Amino acid sequence: MPIQPYTMSKVPHSLMAGSKKEMILVIDVLKAISDEKSLELFRMVALTKQHSDILISKTKLTRKQYYSRMSTLMKAGLIEREEGKHTLTAFGRMIYHTSLAAMENAVNNYWKLKAIESLRKSKVIPAAECKNIIDRFIDDPEIKDIFARDGSTSDSQPYAEVSQQQQRHSSQT
Image (cartoon, rainbow, N blue to C red; front, side, top):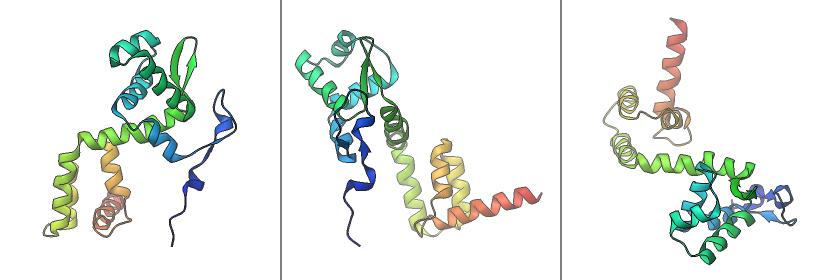
């Protein structure tokens, strides 16, 4: 089955504040936050509501570099300017909270995830014991949830099955 272009991931650009009637593609969003400084700006806008001068000084960008990156973030529909401050659009909030924050969470837990991957690939430990180790090893409920609901690959299936069995058992008692 051929890979479909980003047609299913298009967002009408006309829904973005002050924009032309174009389509935003996933690749547009990724390009907008693809360099370190743009990603830093996007994160700063998401976490604070500061004036341009403060953002420029914190990022150590020239005014031209700053405004070029902010323009790219605005064209991608991620941010808007409101009362002299940049803020996230509704689309930008979704991207930040569902994608970027989740990605940062995964990066922060990279070595734990690598250990779990090695553990699961070894197939020496029974699924129930593997699940117990993961539960003790990972503190983050979102990561635990991903392991619990991810039944799409054969090596994660035992974890999902054990989770379901434990839930049924606890509801019966």
